[in-house]
Image (cartoon, rainbow, N blue to C red; front, side, top):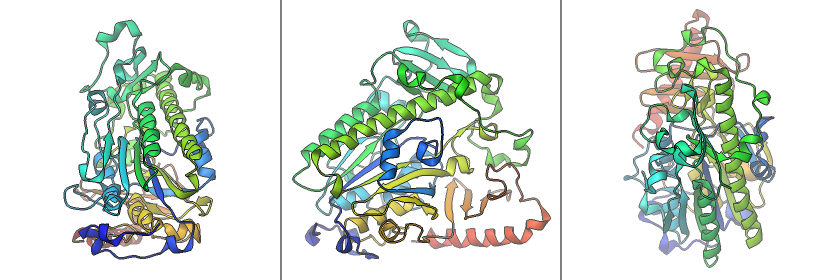
Length: 468
């Protein structure tokens, strides 16, 4: 499509264009931007044997699977603001989002479900906007659900508390400390769930936007807690088939206190219940597979509308998750389980396969701008992946990925993972010989030179975007 320059925003007028994909390849008319919530790389296309994700796998075969993609912030609100604004640390009021950029260039932009941060279950129960960015959208839709109060078999797994559908008033819900350990095997077919409703609305949005190009943000809330899915999805994962993550004795002893901040460890109580730890994984898998089915319905509609070959599809998660690795649960930490995320991009006329290039979620904004033939706003921090998607699948984009949480910072290179905390504590892992990050080498004298290099590299990284 040809860009209508008269519709470009003031921010876009100061843009720079780094790569003209649209002039060389099949032109991208539409963008379908799909965000999962709290999804780690537990997918078949990432080598997970047990989980069933046929629709994500099908998308993976039709695009590029990034095996070394990293979020820039390790919890929901700042991560989503970051990749939507294309900036490492983003204030939603100060810059033009990627969706707004497309809207200002004549696109129909719409949100179905959770794209910017929403409280789950708070905003999903209430049907409220959360931290939405109204300027991004022509149309928006909040997918509601009963969450922990969905009829079915309820479990609060760290308290070994199980209830049936007839004991609704005693269920834990919003505002409780342990809601991340809640699961519900629902009685229905799933049509009452937020992700089902979000998929329905996204399909409706695609159908109505045929007269102009679209940028549709589809946000699923699963597998974010409470992990609710119809019973049939739980039945796919018998407990005796589930293997818990490898752990080592005294694993937390060499992890700085700030490196565990915000995560839930042994104090949660679930370490006392081995079967309940397996039930956590079972519920996580079940909600992932349920989410995958909703993705499949949307992909089917793309094909039936005849627009798959002119639509760029992005599938990602806002961050990963701890499910008992290192004895930790939830997000916030800078470990590989949390900072590494699934990222799949399918582009009409583009390459297919796996890419080992290190990439960041902040790169999505300039990538999509290039694919659509739009200029990239100068305020964007990321680097375009368009050449990698079309010319060289393993083209080197950057030496290291940067992630943060508050004053905690991390760099991930090809072979090493480094974390630095405000109190001076550090973590350093040899990712070739210790990919599960069991041995922190930061206190080893023989690693002094490497630590000096990482400190310098991190200082340069922080300086590179501080005033941009």
